[in-house]
Image (cartoon, rainbow, N blue to C red):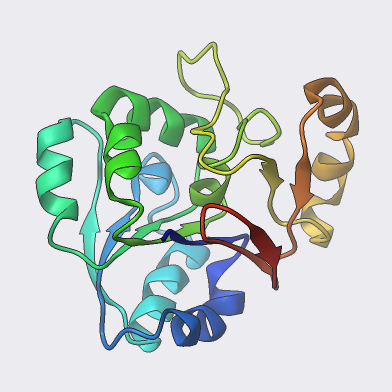
Length: 198
């Protein structure tokens, strides 16, 4: 059974997610690829790592950039939790496809806990086209990994993101997909068959 937690802002729900997972100091792959271009010094990124450790996760930082399917598979085999952080979703998707991380996830999600934060959540949906940060990649196809059958818009209701989010409505309509508008204080849990917003 899959145990997937898709968050908008992990720090807002970390305690609840950690309690629900129920593992004692789980070894956690902190995959920071989406942030590596420009966000590594940002407060939210530093806070993500601190929040994980404060809630009992033993993190090992890792980037999938430049890695092979075999290298990622070996690394992931040694962890309990896969945490994919926020940042640039388009860049994350590009590196996911280049490295074979998409195939790794397909192979391991029945055995590993997955936590997505913003971009790391959007990645698992049907499309990444509703993200507002610039592509900064050569991607021409914005399909997500389609592990969940909807598209996620994180940070809904955040005042600083209001204009960017409201500008997405026409895109949402044209996309023609199920769209989940996810607030920072909420998260989606799915076992692969059903999902709920908590």
